[in-house]
Every structure is written in structure tokens, then in C-alpha cells.
Length: 294
Image (cartoon, rainbow, N blue to C red; front, side, top):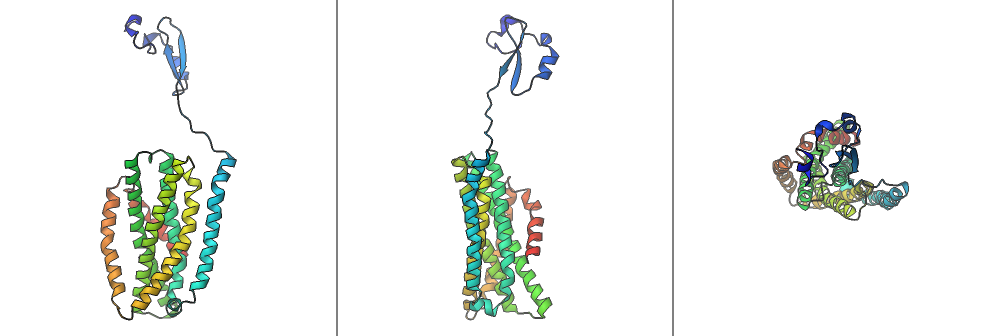
């Protein structure tokens, strides 16, 4: 294609053979594109318009994290006050194994919600949540995955707590075992659902107001996880303990229903492209953290 054939494309080289190789190789693409002027054999450079995100300053980061960290601190202190209040309830006195569940459930909620916040924040910063369709797919997939992990690990934490009591105190009670398992599953499942929606909402709103979600979502998820899990555990345990006298089968029904629902959550998480790989690789850290907490 000669110079006269290139009038509609003034930025295209008229003869690739006349373009010096050093000019093309030394050009810092994609910021600069080397071109050959149509009317002369001189090499020119044209800047490419690129939108580079402005770097965060120390002041902006400090302004974004100060309020969430204050909320996180108050949430943890509030969880301590609430635990001091409920430890004298009848269910905690008659079923002391529930105390063993407290650190494992609090750690479980912190691990699940903070990893959820980290995953969604990363996707938001990469711009993958700008499309509403992809945003909903990502949020629902991650909530399904967290629900599956919460049920399985919540049941495992209850079993570990029962085993520890049986080994150390040489005691075993079937009613206490069913109560612990049902309380742990219900607490972890409902808390995961509530905190997951809150975390996703915080990330979407932060993205809308041009605030880095990494600076906001993780502290809020950590603070709300403690107090939410404690409130749910205490109330669920108290309700099931009172109902156990009249309906001794209710704990078994709850455990069976949650176990039957697990394959459904696994199927949805496996079909979602954002959670398919995490469904296989995200178990080890959560389970190890639960064992250490217990």
C-alpha cells in the first residue's frame, strides 16, 4: 500500500520496510505508538490516551480506615460485654460445652467474612463488579460458597468440641451433642447469610462513592461477625434448650435438613465461574483455623 492509498488512515505506516526497527522496539508501548508520517519518511510518536487510577495517599487511606476500625473496636468490646452477660444463662450453666464453641464460631465467622470481603474487594478494584449482571453473579456465588463452608465447618467445630469434652472429662451426652451441633450449624449459617449481604452491600456502596473497599469492608466484617455470632449462639441455644424438653427430636431434624441442603449449595457454587476453584481450594485454611481456635 503506497502513500496515496493511505489517506483514510493517516496514522498507519505507509511502508513497514522503511520503519526503523530500533524505533519500534524502543517505543514504550502502550503509552507511545510509533508511526510514520504520510507525507514524509520521518518517525513520529503519538501519545495514547490511558486512564491511570490516581494513587492513594496516606491521608486518604487514613480517612477511609479510621471509622471502620473504630467500629471494629467497639464491636469486639461489645462482644466481650455481651459474653460476660450471657454466660450466666441457664443453657450455658447446664451445657458448658457451648463455651468451647464460642472461640471457634467467632474465628469461623471472622475467617469466612474477611476472606469474602477480600475476594469481593479485589474483584471490585479490578472493575469486574461494574457490570450489574456480573456483580449479582459474583455476590450470589460467593454467598453460596460461604453458606456451604459455614454449615460444614460449623458442624465440624461442634463435633471437635464434643470430642474434647469426652476425652478430657470422660462424659458424653447425646442430648448435649445434638444441641451443640444444631446450635453451631444454625448460628454459622444465619450469621454467614446476614454478614455476607452486609459485606457485599458495603463493597458495592464503597465502589459507588469511589472508596477503596479493602479499607472499609474487612474491618466492618470482622467487627460485626463477633457480636452477631454471639447473639445468635446464645439465643438459638436458649430456645433449643427450652424446646428440647417437649420436642426432643427438633435438634435432629435441624441437623438433617442442613446436611441435605449442602449438596444444593455445592452444586450452585460449582456452576459459578467465580467460586468454582475456591470450592476445592478454600477449605484447608478455614478448617485449620477452626481447629486452632477450638
